[in-house]
Image (cartoon, rainbow, N blue to C red; front, top):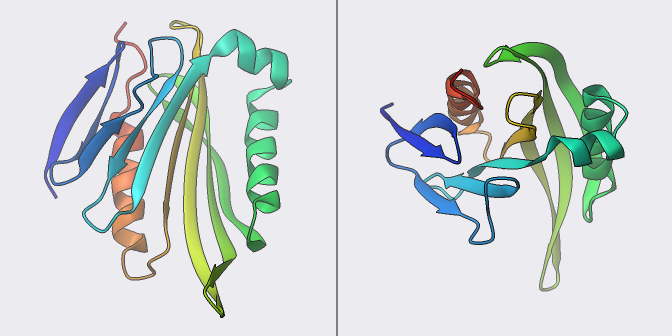
Length: 165
């Protein structure tokens, strides 16, 4: 797979060349989001915000991750969530926490309810140098694309730079 570079507000990463980039129009340097859409409509999001606000809300990076997982479990239509993997890693010199979840979701359409399995990946990190927190989040409901999507997520995660110094 070929990758291109994305950079805004002093952070950057690589993303697949054939994916579409969509920046939330309300984004600014202090807070915002960008999504990378695959041709199959799966997505990888990058959220950022003021580190000071995150530290007021969460006692630690670990609590931030745990409360994010709890929100997923309480989301509408979520029947079951399994934590497949949770580990510490390094992103651009920072301690980060990676989580891989598998969720069973009830999708309702006109007169029909179906159960769908969804793979979710996230990495949370706090960057003191830029006074921001970052969350990289991706998901897919396709078992056929889950390995490819996980590889793309890992590439984005490894190429992520929240600061250059």
